[in-house]
Length: 150
Image (cartoon, rainbow, N blue to C red):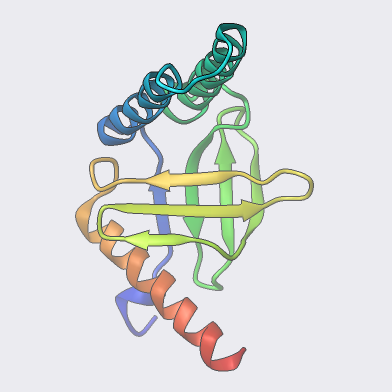
């Protein structure tokens, strides 16, 4: 291996304080906005219950990692292949779909794995700073290669 960017990246996905806060603020803010809209009360309650169900599912999957399909570890090997380990201990090779968000404060990686479409959400408080930087650089480098060839 000639440089650090060819090294495999192994990321243990842990609960994030910032992601948890953002999920609560976003979902509860949506409920507050909902009650400012002129809908029938029954419809407001139905939509609010759907928003709460979404919050519970998202917290259970990404924060508590109680869903069997919750991502708990991500590996990018030297061959640029992705491997995702879920909470039930299953490791599968996955492929990165288009639409990944790469930002210094947030990385959202949508994958495809057969009929499942897992998403990995990473913030700087759950990943080592150097590892997070190397991941962002490799993702941007991959994106620039894809735009040159495609």
